[in-house]
Structures are given as structure tokens and as C-alpha cells.
Length: 550
Image 1 (tube, rainbow, N blue to C red):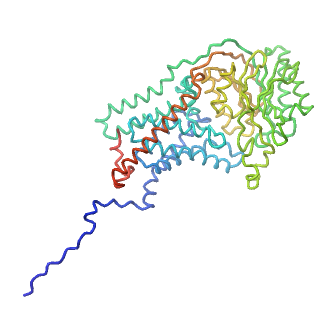
Image 2 (image 1 turned 135 degrees about the vertical axis):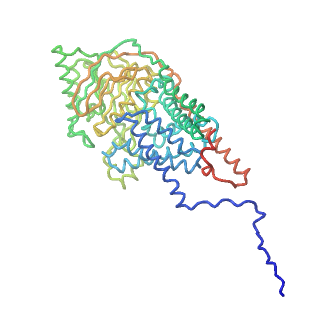
């Protein structure tokens, strides 16, 4: 009888190597797993766009911030960055849809560039989501993202700041304390606190309801804090103004029409105003304001343009601010100027736009890009930037002039107030983007500037929207688009400055640097954890979300 032979057990050669790492799912499986999060991010981006003009559903800006905080919570930097991009791209495509007048390629190109900043924000939110007080760092990072986007590339593009969606909301008065950056911070803090409260409730409503209620209460305090901020509006003096909107022959890229057409429109409306004054229908203003590009010809070199402007100004008999394109220091440049025109002395002081718009008013890398983008040749000459602010004496009023997109840049507007501007003037030409939503977005920015600096804001636009805005941000009167009109108003002149004027850029830099430091601290902590764990362990994204709530 044969004895049973005991089979030799196979030796597990990896038994002493410690626990194996869990196998990572395949790329396709990871993509599928991330699709719901990506879809929610896209939806959040569309909601954020709807919070801006012309829709003005400002509470959606809070929800969008909360959504991005939730969607990036506990994720890796790469996952957070993708989520941020998935929110940012549809947001900017919708917000900047008015660029379709130039071309959808311009809309898509600029939207992609801007969305990359939101991608970095998403990655940073993911990194800092494990830190104590993470809603605070999330709010700081929103300011950091806007701080970078306002300056880069090519001088930056500030459109789409959270503050500009909240120019007529409970958050608005906060601008008088710290400008647009502080408004962005408070809006983002409110959204992040709501996200924190929602995460607490996921632990279980009975156990976490009191703490979640505290988070929601803190968000409510952030929302209502603006009502406690005093907005200075008392006038030191007043001035009677008339804003002239002469209109254009047609909106779009060729709004100028034939030479002197736009100039004649504004001169004719000014002469109608003079006739109404003579007939006693309206009081004589102290000053008249024409918009940007109200003269498409250089009055210094073109006798016909000079004569037409001078004739119109003499008819109304008061100093007039005229917007004109004038020759630059050389044949390759032109300047976008606001010129004080006296009815007796003619042209006097002038302001040159400091921040020309890339690809619209000058072409970076012209020699190279013009070979591949033929449309850039339509910008025949580059706009030459000005070297000083727009504070000028216009009749009895010391004005602070800014031109068109400059109203979006904090420091340009702030400098005019700190240098003595008693009323803000925004000369603008939105004829290219008429009835596209862009004029409403620019109007909203001017409303925030009024509160931020405690100044009345006068918007003179070639084709609309022209408006008179009180120092508290309320719109006193406004025009419709693509129609000639004249607005008459008595507006306050103010000498005092707000806390935001006195602090300058300090709140923005403080909050932005705090966001960067929090991100750096979180990244360093993650590196230490990986080193101490020998590179093993699960990814932060794979841990249950409910275990990650502080």
C-alpha cells in the first residue's frame, strides 16, 4: 500500500514584503468615476455665469462657490484642477459670449486662458481642504486666483470676479472697506461655510445638526455683514452735468461708419441740448461729457474735426469732455484720449488711456501673429498707453476720468480718487458689443466703484449704456442702447475717502498671500505624510468623504 505523499505548499515569496498596494483602477474606470463630478462642475459654472449681468442672479455666485468647495473636497491636486477647469470653461464661455462679435475663436481662446486660473484654484482648494479652518483658506484662494488673473497675462483681464456679480447685493457695501477683493472674499467665505455646513450634515443630521447650524449661521453673518458698513454719500458740493450719447450708424466691428459720422452724431445731440437750454426746457449744465471715441478723427491734426467739435461746444457754452482718437508719438501708434474742451479756449488738459486692451487696441507679438491671424491687421496702429491718471479740472468739477475697460482695474480707479477726483467719469464705447450683455456687465462694475470710493459715477457711452450712478451705487438714470440721448443730472462732489481708498491694495495682497501660504503649508504636509508612509497608502481621493469633515 502506497503511503500518501504530502504535497509541498508553494512559497509566497512576497509574504515578507508587507501588505500590497491596492490595484489602481484603469484609466477608463477613473474617467467614468469622475464624470458625475465633472458634470456637476459644468453646471456650477453655468450657475456662476447666471449670477452676472445681464441675468443678475447674484445668490447663484454663493452656490457656485459652495459647489466647487464640495466637488474638490478631499481630492488630489490633479482632480481638483480638472474640476476647476470644468467649472471655469463654461463659466467664461457664457460670461464672455459677447466676444462672438469678433469671432467664436476669440471667445474660446480667452475663455480657455481664464479657465486655467480657475483650474489652479480647484487644485489649491483640494490641497487645502484638509487644513483646519479650510473655509477661510478657500475664500482667500478665490482672492488669490483673481489677484493673478487681474494681472496675467499681458496686464490681466479682471472680468468675472465674484465682486462684479455682487454690485447690488447685501455684500456690496463691503467694497467701501476693502474694495472688490474684500467683496470677493466675503462672498467666497459665505459659499465655503455653506459647503462646510452641508458636509457636517452628511455625518448624520441628529449628531451634527447643531454644528452645521453654526456654519450656516456664520454664512448668514457673512451675507448680512455688509448692512453694518457705512457708505459715505454726503456731498461737499454739487455739479450739473449733461451726458451726451450720440449713437452709431450700426453696432459691431464697423460701428464708426464713414469718417466724422460718430462725431457729427454727438455734435448734433449737443446742439439739440443747446436749443433745449435756450428754450428753457432744461437748465444749463455746468459741464458736458462726451464718450470714448466720440471723435474718430484727431482734432489736433484734422481741421474739420476741430471745427465741428468747437462749434458744438460753443453752442452749449460750457466746458466739455471729448473722447477722441489722436495720433501717438510716432506713425505706428494712436492714443485714446479724453480732452477738456473749453468753449472759449478750445482743447486743454487731456488724459490718455493707460491700459490698452490686448488684441483690441494693440497687438502683442504683431510681426509673428499677424502672419497667421489675418483679422489682427484690422488693428492698423497700436494704442500708446498713457503715463498719468485721469484727474483733470472740468469747469467747476475736479473729475477722475477712466476710459472703458479701465473701470475693471482696481488701481486705475483708486489712483484717480486718491489724487483728488471728486466725481468719477467713465468714457466708454461699447458699440462693438451692443445688446450682447457686455454693456450691462460694465455698468455693474461702475456701480461697485461708486460704493468702493464713495463717488458718483458718470458713464458716457457712444451707443449705451450711459448712466448716472449715486455714491451708494444706485442708478439714478440710464439710457437704452442704440439710441441717441442726453442725461441731465445734479450729482454730488465729494472730497472724503473711504477705508478702501486709504488701505489701497493691502487687503488684496494680504488675502492673496494668505491663500498661497495655506496652499504651500498643505502641500508640505502632504509631502511629509507620503515620506513617513513610505509612499504607500490610499489616495486622499479614495477615502470616504464623510471621514474628512473636521
